Length: 88
Image (cartoon, rainbow, N blue to C red):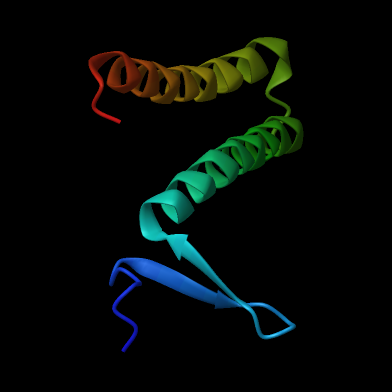
């Protein structure tokens, strides 16, 4: 076993058989920053589709997107508070 590699790393094989070592924390941070916005966009599409299929009207669509927006705002505020407190 290679002792220079931490047990908390992911080893990815490239096509030309070179190894790339990615720290798990770095991988998690990258996936969080890429996948959460993608999930938010997908949820926005779902809300728009529901509003369109059920003829929610302008006010109903506003309420649906307002609710989704409050959830996204809560996530963003949590991230900002954690950064300001030095937790992350």
